[in-house]
Length: 322
Image 1 (spheres, rainbow, N blue to C red):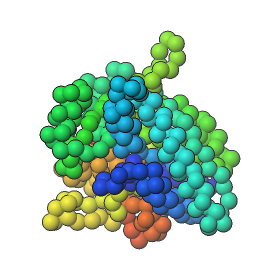
Image 2: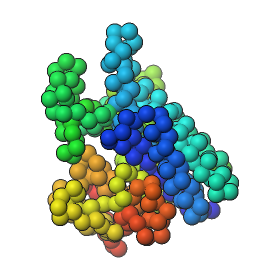
Image 3: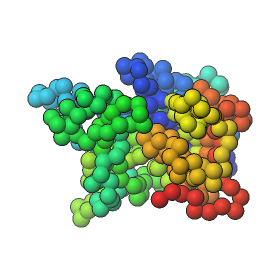
Image 4: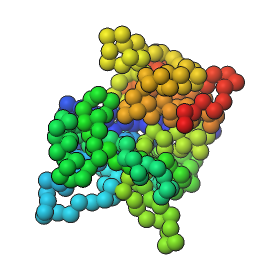
């Protein structure tokens, strides 16, 4: 049977900073992601696609804010569900069209996916996940006062709203994802990190949070026994001293090097850091390799000609940073 690859499409790669984030903009970027995913399928992998939704959830909340008092504000779990549907629709069409252009067979399905979190997770006390558009500090502070938001700087790129990001405990639809893979379908799942839910006496219920997409992608890849975890983001690879005059792009990292750079603060917790942490988790769980690159460089990255390849150092264990 063909090996499995999990392809994690960044929310910012679908709605880059500096664009309006219109449906037409997102469709154009989804087309690039679809071509990248078709390249992975063409390379002989079965594929599960995950995606971020930070900008999209933020935009939903902004629309609701501006519609007050005429329309109610939806909770975060409902916003994640809405973006799973909307982005899933874009990616289904983009992947199908890319496969058709390459004359490759295969169906594509977007699966509404819930992820169980722990109600005692400390993330509920200290919100840290940035969502939505960027603001100046002054505007962010104004919204903090008027709307009760938690706000903070996001990797020096601007100020954003921050919400709880609890650790994923269980992917509810995992068995259904496996069934899709086993029947030859490309499955889009765990969009936005999954809809956050908690278990209670009456069953599952939604919770106000956004789960980190990279963490869930690593957990999903490990559970599926994937060989490859591919991160499609808005940069071509991993760099040291990113955005600085001494910036240096990396072609390859082993797990020990990645952990050391992470501990030194080289990778921002709001952008590249979670991808490196997720890659380390995946490699610790037995994954063969992880790649970080942009959609436009994905095909080249599969052959080692672009992006950053991350592999386990032979004999290394427990490389994850707590």
